[in-house]
Length: 149
Image 1 (cartoon, rainbow, N blue to C red):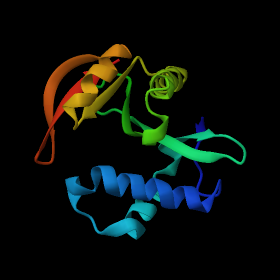
Image 2: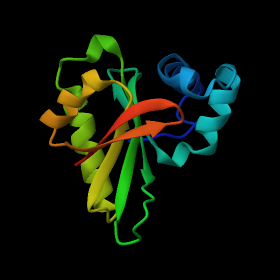
Image 3: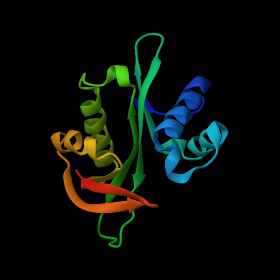
Image 4: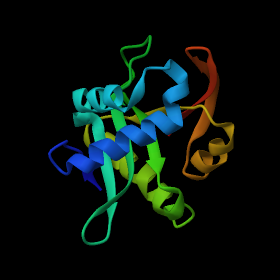
């Protein structure tokens, strides 16, 4: 697991854009992979990639952003774009991703990690990783569950 840079491997940017388009493209309806690649490049300093094998194969990603709330007293990170290739699920890698996100957040001075899930089926996974549901939310017109760790 390491920070992402579009110079790591140009094919990784293409794959990450495809994951974002396939998983979350319906939310905003922005057109296509070129837009997604540009968006990821613009915020690439927030992304981390998970690789496997030699040569390194990209198998997952996540992003951490400063969490902005109504209270300036909360120093938190927001976990977004958590993705793991289907063939690597169920092997403990997802839990490792969450633990890594928590450690990175802590090393950057955050006291907690917040995330919104659009897929209620994932809530149990996050709860097993130590997350607590704090409220229901909404991302544009899509209902979410807000969790904290």
